[in-house]
Length: 466
Image 1: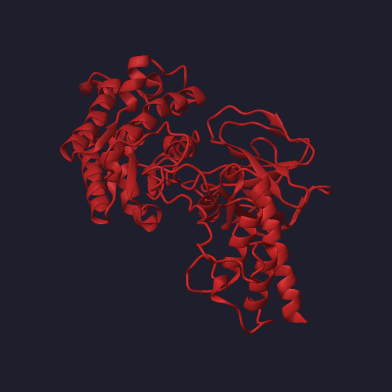
Image 2 (image 1 turned 30 degrees about the vertical axis):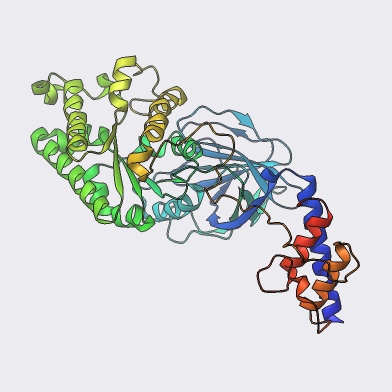
Protein backbone atom coordinates (compact mmCIF):
# COMPACT_ATOMS: atom_id res chain seq x y z
CA UNK A 1 0.00 0.00 0.00
CA UNK A 2 2.79 2.45 0.91
CA UNK A 3 4.53 1.81 -2.39
CA UNK A 4 1.28 2.35 -4.29
CA UNK A 5 0.69 5.65 -2.52
CA UNK A 6 4.27 6.66 -3.22
CA UNK A 7 3.75 5.88 -6.90
CA UNK A 8 0.55 7.91 -7.05
CA UNK A 9 2.19 10.89 -5.33
CA UNK A 10 5.25 10.71 -7.53
CA UNK A 11 3.15 10.59 -10.69
CA UNK A 12 1.01 13.46 -9.46
CA UNK A 13 4.06 15.59 -8.74
CA UNK A 14 5.59 14.81 -12.09
CA UNK A 15 2.37 15.61 -13.93
CA UNK A 16 1.94 18.86 -11.98
CA UNK A 17 5.53 19.74 -12.74
CA UNK A 18 4.95 19.20 -16.46
CA UNK A 19 1.78 21.27 -16.42
CA UNK A 20 3.50 24.07 -14.53
CA UNK A 21 6.45 23.96 -16.90
CA UNK A 22 4.26 24.13 -19.97
CA UNK A 23 2.04 26.96 -18.72
CA UNK A 24 4.71 29.37 -17.48
CA UNK A 25 7.69 31.08 -18.96
CA UNK A 26 11.08 29.51 -18.25
CA UNK A 27 12.16 32.72 -16.46
CA UNK A 28 9.70 31.85 -13.68
CA UNK A 29 11.72 28.76 -12.78
CA UNK A 30 13.09 29.54 -9.30
CA UNK A 31 15.35 27.91 -6.78
CA UNK A 32 15.00 28.59 -3.06
CA UNK A 33 17.44 28.27 -0.19
CA UNK A 34 17.67 29.64 3.32
CA UNK A 35 19.86 32.72 3.74
CA UNK A 36 19.65 32.89 7.52
CA UNK A 37 17.72 34.37 10.41
CA UNK A 38 17.70 37.89 11.84
CA UNK A 39 16.66 38.96 15.34
CA UNK A 40 14.22 41.83 15.83
CA UNK A 41 14.62 44.34 18.64
CA UNK A 42 11.60 46.66 18.32
CA UNK A 43 8.13 47.05 16.80
CA UNK A 44 6.87 50.40 15.50
CA UNK A 45 9.50 52.60 17.21
CA UNK A 46 9.50 56.34 16.67
CA UNK A 47 11.66 57.82 13.94
CA UNK A 48 14.73 58.31 16.12
CA UNK A 49 14.05 56.60 19.45
CA UNK A 50 16.58 56.66 22.26
CA UNK A 51 19.53 54.36 21.56
CA UNK A 52 18.32 53.70 17.99
CA UNK A 53 21.78 52.64 16.82
CA UNK A 54 21.86 49.01 15.71
CA UNK A 55 18.10 48.41 16.12
CA UNK A 56 16.32 46.04 13.76
CA UNK A 57 12.70 47.19 13.91
CA UNK A 58 9.54 45.88 12.25
CA UNK A 59 6.73 48.24 11.26
CA UNK A 60 3.13 47.19 10.74
CA UNK A 61 0.37 48.79 8.64
CA UNK A 62 -0.28 52.49 9.18
CA UNK A 63 3.26 53.36 10.25
CA UNK A 64 5.26 55.96 8.36
CA UNK A 65 8.69 55.11 6.99
CA UNK A 66 11.33 57.77 6.55
CA UNK A 67 14.68 58.78 7.99
CA UNK A 68 17.82 58.77 5.89
CA UNK A 69 19.91 56.91 8.46
CA UNK A 70 17.82 53.73 8.35
CA UNK A 71 18.26 51.00 5.75
CA UNK A 72 14.82 49.72 4.78
CA UNK A 73 12.95 46.71 3.39
CA UNK A 74 9.30 46.80 2.32
CA UNK A 75 7.47 43.49 1.92
CA UNK A 76 3.95 42.29 1.05
CA UNK A 77 2.02 39.28 2.38
CA UNK A 78 1.87 36.25 0.11
CA UNK A 79 -1.36 35.07 1.78
CA UNK A 80 0.38 32.08 3.30
CA UNK A 81 1.93 33.66 6.38
CA UNK A 82 5.04 34.99 4.65
CA UNK A 83 6.07 38.36 3.24
CA UNK A 84 7.74 38.88 -0.14
CA UNK A 85 10.33 41.65 -0.43
CA UNK A 86 9.24 44.38 -2.85
CA UNK A 87 11.80 47.11 -2.12
CA UNK A 88 15.20 47.40 -0.48
CA UNK A 89 16.48 50.93 0.13
CA UNK A 90 19.94 51.88 1.33
CA UNK A 91 20.41 54.46 4.05
CA UNK A 92 21.10 58.10 3.10
CA UNK A 93 18.46 57.80 0.36
CA UNK A 94 15.17 59.68 0.69
CA UNK A 95 12.19 57.37 1.25
CA UNK A 96 8.75 58.26 2.55
CA UNK A 97 5.96 55.72 2.65
CA UNK A 98 3.12 54.55 4.87
CA UNK A 99 2.92 50.79 5.38
CA UNK A 100 -0.16 49.44 3.60
CA UNK A 101 -2.52 46.79 4.91
CA UNK A 102 -1.08 43.35 4.23
CA UNK A 103 2.46 44.72 4.26
CA UNK A 104 5.32 45.16 6.71
CA UNK A 105 8.60 47.03 6.73
CA UNK A 106 11.95 46.32 8.35
CA UNK A 107 14.42 49.06 9.21
CA UNK A 108 17.95 48.66 10.54
CA UNK A 109 20.11 51.42 12.01
CA UNK A 110 23.52 49.88 11.29
CA UNK A 111 26.27 51.42 13.43
CA UNK A 112 28.61 48.56 14.38
CA UNK A 113 31.30 50.85 15.78
CA UNK A 114 29.04 52.64 18.26
CA UNK A 115 29.91 52.78 21.94
CA UNK A 116 27.65 49.86 22.90
CA UNK A 117 29.28 46.45 22.45
CA UNK A 118 25.99 44.62 23.08
CA UNK A 119 24.12 46.29 20.23
CA UNK A 120 27.19 46.23 17.98
CA UNK A 121 27.26 42.43 18.06
CA UNK A 122 23.49 42.32 17.59
CA UNK A 123 23.68 44.46 14.45
CA UNK A 124 26.70 42.72 12.94
CA UNK A 125 24.97 39.33 13.07
CA UNK A 126 21.80 40.78 11.54
CA UNK A 127 23.73 42.59 8.81
CA UNK A 128 25.30 39.36 7.56
CA UNK A 129 21.81 38.20 6.59
CA UNK A 130 20.33 41.58 5.69
CA UNK A 131 23.08 42.36 3.20
CA UNK A 132 22.21 39.25 1.13
CA UNK A 133 18.47 39.90 0.86
CA UNK A 134 17.15 40.73 -2.61
CA UNK A 135 13.80 41.81 -3.99
CA UNK A 136 11.62 38.69 -4.34
CA UNK A 137 13.04 36.91 -1.29
CA UNK A 138 10.64 35.57 1.32
CA UNK A 139 10.43 36.63 4.99
CA UNK A 140 8.88 34.52 7.75
CA UNK A 141 8.31 36.55 10.94
CA UNK A 142 7.79 35.01 14.37
CA UNK A 143 7.48 36.44 17.88
CA UNK A 144 5.54 39.50 16.72
CA UNK A 145 1.83 40.28 17.22
CA UNK A 146 0.90 43.02 14.77
CA UNK A 147 -2.67 43.35 16.12
CA UNK A 148 -1.49 43.92 19.69
CA UNK A 149 1.66 45.66 18.48
CA UNK A 150 3.84 43.54 20.74
CA UNK A 151 7.18 41.81 20.29
CA UNK A 152 8.60 38.89 22.25
CA UNK A 153 11.57 40.45 24.03
CA UNK A 154 12.81 40.59 27.60
CA UNK A 155 15.33 42.78 29.37
CA UNK A 156 16.45 46.24 28.35
CA UNK A 157 17.70 47.19 24.89
CA UNK A 158 21.43 48.12 25.02
CA UNK A 159 21.89 46.06 28.20
CA UNK A 160 23.42 42.60 28.55
CA UNK A 161 20.08 41.16 29.77
CA UNK A 162 18.27 41.95 26.49
CA UNK A 163 16.87 38.81 24.81
CA UNK A 164 14.64 38.67 21.75
CA UNK A 165 12.64 35.69 20.53
CA UNK A 166 11.29 37.70 17.60
CA UNK A 167 12.88 36.41 14.42
CA UNK A 168 12.89 36.96 10.68
CA UNK A 169 13.73 33.83 8.70
CA UNK A 170 14.90 34.74 5.20
CA UNK A 171 14.56 32.42 2.22
CA UNK A 172 16.19 33.38 -1.07
CA UNK A 173 14.12 32.99 -4.22
CA UNK A 174 16.35 33.15 -7.27
CA UNK A 175 15.57 32.83 -10.96
CA UNK A 176 17.40 29.76 -12.24
CA UNK A 177 17.41 31.19 -15.76
CA UNK A 178 18.69 34.66 -14.87
CA UNK A 179 21.38 36.07 -17.13
CA UNK A 180 24.92 35.44 -15.97
CA UNK A 181 28.24 37.20 -16.53
CA UNK A 182 31.92 36.51 -15.87
CA UNK A 183 31.31 38.04 -12.41
CA UNK A 184 28.47 35.63 -11.53
CA UNK A 185 30.71 33.02 -9.92
CA UNK A 186 33.00 35.62 -8.33
CA UNK A 187 32.77 36.74 -4.71
CA UNK A 188 33.13 40.52 -4.40
CA UNK A 189 33.59 42.22 -1.02
CA UNK A 190 33.47 46.00 -0.48
CA UNK A 191 35.40 47.30 2.53
CA UNK A 192 35.23 50.90 3.64
CA UNK A 193 33.45 53.39 5.90
CA UNK A 194 29.87 54.71 6.24
CA UNK A 195 29.91 55.98 2.64
CA UNK A 196 30.53 52.36 1.62
CA UNK A 197 27.78 51.03 3.90
CA UNK A 198 25.19 53.55 2.74
CA UNK A 199 23.25 54.28 -0.41
CA UNK A 200 22.46 50.71 -1.38
CA UNK A 201 25.02 51.04 -4.16
CA UNK A 202 26.28 47.49 -3.67
CA UNK A 203 22.72 46.23 -4.34
CA UNK A 204 22.73 48.03 -7.69
CA UNK A 205 26.25 46.87 -8.50
CA UNK A 206 25.21 43.28 -7.68
CA UNK A 207 22.32 43.50 -10.14
CA UNK A 208 24.42 45.13 -12.85
CA UNK A 209 27.22 42.54 -12.61
CA UNK A 210 24.76 39.64 -12.06
CA UNK A 211 26.41 38.54 -8.84
CA UNK A 212 26.39 39.27 -5.10
CA UNK A 213 28.53 42.09 -3.72
CA UNK A 214 29.08 41.75 0.03
CA UNK A 215 29.10 45.06 1.86
CA UNK A 216 31.63 44.90 4.69
CA UNK A 217 31.81 48.62 5.31
CA UNK A 218 31.82 49.99 8.88
CA UNK A 219 30.72 53.53 9.66
CA UNK A 220 33.59 55.59 11.05
CA UNK A 221 36.28 53.18 9.84
CA UNK A 222 39.75 53.95 8.49
CA UNK A 223 42.03 51.82 6.35
CA UNK A 224 44.43 51.18 9.22
CA UNK A 225 41.72 50.30 11.79
CA UNK A 226 39.81 48.06 9.38
CA UNK A 227 42.89 46.08 8.43
CA UNK A 228 43.86 45.56 12.07
CA UNK A 229 40.45 44.71 13.51
CA UNK A 230 38.13 43.49 10.76
CA UNK A 231 39.98 42.18 7.72
CA UNK A 232 40.01 38.52 8.80
CA UNK A 233 36.36 38.40 9.92
CA UNK A 234 34.70 40.67 7.35
CA UNK A 235 36.84 40.29 4.23
CA UNK A 236 39.03 37.17 4.21
CA UNK A 237 36.26 35.08 5.79
CA UNK A 238 34.28 35.33 2.54
CA UNK A 239 37.19 34.00 0.45
CA UNK A 240 36.75 36.85 -2.05
CA UNK A 241 37.88 36.96 -5.65
CA UNK A 242 37.71 40.76 -5.77
CA UNK A 243 37.97 43.30 -2.94
CA UNK A 244 36.83 46.90 -3.34
CA UNK A 245 38.89 49.15 -1.04
CA UNK A 246 37.20 52.49 -0.36
CA UNK A 247 38.75 54.48 2.48
CA UNK A 248 39.89 58.08 2.64
CA UNK A 249 37.53 60.56 4.27
CA UNK A 250 37.89 59.37 7.87
CA UNK A 251 41.58 58.84 7.18
CA UNK A 252 41.82 62.49 6.10
CA UNK A 253 39.83 64.22 8.85
CA UNK A 254 40.15 62.00 11.92
CA UNK A 255 41.37 63.87 14.99
CA UNK A 256 44.31 61.48 15.39
CA UNK A 257 45.61 62.13 11.88
CA UNK A 258 44.92 65.84 12.22
CA UNK A 259 47.50 66.07 15.01
CA UNK A 260 50.30 64.86 12.72
CA UNK A 261 49.35 64.93 9.04
CA UNK A 262 52.60 63.51 7.58
CA UNK A 263 52.48 60.56 9.99
CA UNK A 264 48.79 60.06 9.25
CA UNK A 265 49.44 60.05 5.52
CA UNK A 266 52.25 57.51 5.93
CA UNK A 267 49.95 55.29 8.02
CA UNK A 268 47.22 55.54 5.39
CA UNK A 269 49.56 54.60 2.55
CA UNK A 270 51.00 51.68 4.50
CA UNK A 271 47.50 50.40 5.28
CA UNK A 272 46.52 50.51 1.59
CA UNK A 273 49.66 48.61 0.63
CA UNK A 274 49.11 46.07 3.40
CA UNK A 275 45.48 45.55 2.34
CA UNK A 276 46.65 44.95 -1.22
CA UNK A 277 49.23 42.44 0.05
CA UNK A 278 46.63 40.64 2.16
CA UNK A 279 44.21 40.50 -0.78
CA UNK A 280 46.90 39.12 -3.05
CA UNK A 281 47.85 36.51 -0.46
CA UNK A 282 44.30 35.10 -0.40
CA UNK A 283 44.03 35.17 -4.20
CA UNK A 284 41.85 38.29 -4.47
CA UNK A 285 42.25 41.16 -6.92
CA UNK A 286 42.06 44.69 -5.53
CA UNK A 287 39.96 47.57 -6.81
CA UNK A 288 40.77 50.92 -5.21
CA UNK A 289 37.82 53.31 -5.09
CA UNK A 290 38.10 56.86 -3.78
CA UNK A 291 35.36 58.46 -1.68
CA UNK A 292 33.20 61.40 -2.72
CA UNK A 293 34.10 64.98 -1.91
CA UNK A 294 32.71 66.43 1.33
CA UNK A 295 31.53 69.77 2.79
CA UNK A 296 34.93 71.33 3.24
CA UNK A 297 33.82 74.22 5.45
CA UNK A 298 32.66 71.81 8.18
CA UNK A 299 36.12 70.33 8.75
CA UNK A 300 38.58 72.93 7.50
CA UNK A 301 41.03 74.58 9.87
CA UNK A 302 44.61 75.80 10.40
CA UNK A 303 45.93 72.23 10.69
CA UNK A 304 45.65 71.93 6.90
CA UNK A 305 47.27 75.25 5.96
CA UNK A 306 50.47 73.56 4.81
CA UNK A 307 48.43 71.81 2.11
CA UNK A 308 46.49 74.88 1.03
CA UNK A 309 43.53 74.02 3.24
CA UNK A 310 41.47 70.89 3.76
CA UNK A 311 40.66 70.47 0.06
CA UNK A 312 44.35 70.37 -0.77
CA UNK A 313 44.94 67.88 2.02
CA UNK A 314 42.19 65.55 0.76
CA UNK A 315 43.67 65.90 -2.74
CA UNK A 316 46.91 64.57 -1.25
CA UNK A 317 45.20 61.68 0.55
CA UNK A 318 43.25 60.57 -2.55
CA UNK A 319 46.38 61.07 -4.66
CA UNK A 320 48.11 58.57 -2.40
CA UNK A 321 45.44 55.95 -3.13
CA UNK A 322 45.81 56.64 -6.86
CA UNK A 323 49.59 56.26 -6.61
CA UNK A 324 49.31 52.90 -4.84
CA UNK A 325 46.73 51.65 -7.36
CA UNK A 326 48.90 52.61 -10.31
CA UNK A 327 51.99 51.04 -8.77
CA UNK A 328 50.21 47.70 -8.38
CA UNK A 329 48.36 47.93 -11.74
CA UNK A 330 45.00 47.88 -9.96
CA UNK A 331 41.76 49.35 -11.22
CA UNK A 332 41.26 52.79 -9.65
CA UNK A 333 37.73 54.24 -9.67
CA UNK A 334 38.11 57.94 -8.91
CA UNK A 335 34.78 59.09 -7.48
CA UNK A 336 36.46 61.98 -5.68
CA UNK A 337 37.71 63.69 -8.86
CA UNK A 338 34.31 63.17 -10.50
CA UNK A 339 32.60 64.90 -7.57
CA UNK A 340 35.02 67.83 -7.79
CA UNK A 341 34.66 68.19 -11.57
CA UNK A 342 30.85 68.13 -11.42
CA UNK A 343 30.64 70.24 -8.27
CA UNK A 344 28.39 67.70 -6.55
CA UNK A 345 29.34 68.73 -3.00
CA UNK A 346 27.84 70.03 -0.81
CA UNK A 347 24.50 70.18 -2.68
CA UNK A 348 24.21 66.42 -2.99
CA UNK A 349 25.21 65.52 0.56
CA UNK A 350 22.79 64.42 3.28
CA UNK A 351 25.05 66.00 5.87
CA UNK A 352 28.71 66.95 5.73
CA UNK A 353 29.98 63.71 4.20
CA UNK A 354 27.30 61.25 2.99
CA UNK A 355 25.83 61.38 -0.53
CA UNK A 356 22.14 61.72 -1.24
CA UNK A 357 20.51 59.38 -3.76
CA UNK A 358 21.66 61.77 -6.51
CA UNK A 359 25.24 61.45 -5.29
CA UNK A 360 25.15 57.67 -5.03
CA UNK A 361 23.57 57.38 -8.49
CA UNK A 362 26.35 59.56 -9.88
CA UNK A 363 28.86 57.21 -8.28
CA UNK A 364 27.18 54.19 -9.90
CA UNK A 365 27.41 55.85 -13.30
CA UNK A 366 31.17 55.61 -12.90
CA UNK A 367 31.45 52.35 -10.91
CA UNK A 368 29.30 50.05 -13.06
CA UNK A 369 30.97 50.89 -16.41
CA UNK A 370 34.39 50.59 -14.75
CA UNK A 371 33.64 47.01 -13.70
CA UNK A 372 32.07 46.09 -17.03
CA UNK A 373 34.93 47.59 -19.03
CA UNK A 374 37.52 45.74 -16.92
CA UNK A 375 35.96 42.29 -16.94
CA UNK A 376 39.10 40.88 -18.58
CA UNK A 377 41.35 42.29 -15.86
CA UNK A 378 39.18 41.36 -12.89
CA UNK A 379 37.79 38.02 -14.06
CA UNK A 380 40.61 36.79 -16.33
CA UNK A 381 37.94 36.66 -19.02
CA UNK A 382 39.12 36.17 -22.58
CA UNK A 383 37.36 37.95 -25.40
CA UNK A 384 34.63 40.57 -25.31
CA UNK A 385 31.59 39.95 -23.12
CA UNK A 386 28.24 41.11 -24.52
CA UNK A 387 26.52 42.95 -21.65
CA UNK A 388 23.57 43.81 -23.90
CA UNK A 389 22.64 40.21 -24.69
CA UNK A 390 19.07 39.36 -23.68
CA UNK A 391 19.69 35.64 -23.30
CA UNK A 392 22.48 33.63 -21.77
CA UNK A 393 25.14 32.22 -24.14
CA UNK A 394 25.01 28.47 -24.65
CA UNK A 395 28.25 27.82 -22.78
CA UNK A 396 27.46 29.66 -19.56
CA UNK A 397 25.97 26.63 -17.85
CA UNK A 398 23.06 28.72 -16.59
CA UNK A 399 20.54 26.16 -17.81
CA UNK A 400 20.55 22.67 -19.22
CA UNK A 401 18.09 22.02 -22.05
CA UNK A 402 16.08 18.79 -22.01
CA UNK A 403 17.46 16.14 -24.29
CA UNK A 404 15.07 14.18 -26.44
CA UNK A 405 14.14 10.52 -26.01
CA UNK A 406 16.88 8.25 -27.29
CA UNK A 407 15.95 6.66 -30.61
CA UNK A 408 14.29 3.28 -30.12
CA UNK A 409 13.48 3.96 -26.48
CA UNK A 410 10.34 4.99 -24.61
CA UNK A 411 7.56 2.72 -25.89
CA UNK A 412 7.70 0.53 -22.79
CA UNK A 413 4.34 -1.26 -23.29
CA UNK A 414 5.05 -1.78 -27.00
CA UNK A 415 1.74 -0.31 -28.17
CA UNK A 416 3.35 1.86 -30.83
CA UNK A 417 2.85 5.11 -28.88
CA UNK A 418 5.08 6.86 -26.37
CA UNK A 419 2.78 8.37 -23.77
CA UNK A 420 1.96 8.60 -20.04
CA UNK A 421 1.12 4.88 -19.91
CA UNK A 422 4.78 4.17 -20.56
CA UNK A 423 5.74 6.65 -17.81
CA UNK A 424 3.42 4.85 -15.37
CA UNK A 425 5.13 1.52 -16.07
CA UNK A 426 8.53 3.08 -15.39
CA UNK A 427 7.30 4.55 -12.11
CA UNK A 428 5.89 1.18 -11.05
CA UNK A 429 9.24 -0.41 -11.80
CA UNK A 430 11.12 2.33 -9.94
CA UNK A 431 8.79 1.83 -6.94
CA UNK A 432 9.39 -1.95 -6.93
CA UNK A 433 5.81 -2.81 -7.90
CA UNK A 434 6.95 -4.73 -10.98
CA UNK A 435 10.16 -6.70 -11.20
CA UNK A 436 10.90 -6.85 -14.90
CA UNK A 437 10.96 -4.18 -17.58
CA UNK A 438 12.54 -3.81 -21.00
CA UNK A 439 15.64 -1.67 -21.44
CA UNK A 440 13.48 0.34 -23.84
CA UNK A 441 12.39 2.13 -20.64
CA UNK A 442 15.80 3.83 -20.40
CA UNK A 443 14.43 6.82 -22.32
CA UNK A 444 17.35 9.14 -21.64
CA UNK A 445 19.99 6.48 -22.28
CA UNK A 446 21.86 7.00 -19.03
CA UNK A 447 21.97 3.27 -18.17
CA UNK A 448 19.34 3.56 -15.41
CA UNK A 449 15.57 3.15 -15.43
CA UNK A 450 14.06 5.61 -12.98
CA UNK A 451 11.73 8.60 -12.60
CA UNK A 452 14.00 10.73 -14.81
CA UNK A 453 12.96 8.53 -17.73
CA UNK A 454 9.30 8.87 -16.71
CA UNK A 455 9.65 12.65 -16.55
CA UNK A 456 11.21 12.74 -20.02
CA UNK A 457 8.34 10.71 -21.45
CA UNK A 458 5.73 12.93 -19.77
CA UNK A 459 7.37 16.01 -21.28
CA UNK A 460 7.40 14.29 -24.67
CA UNK A 461 3.73 13.39 -24.30
CA UNK A 462 2.94 17.03 -23.38
CA UNK A 463 4.71 18.29 -26.51
CA UNK A 464 7.50 20.06 -24.59
CA UNK A 465 10.30 18.13 -26.29
CA UNK A 466 10.60 16.44 -29.63
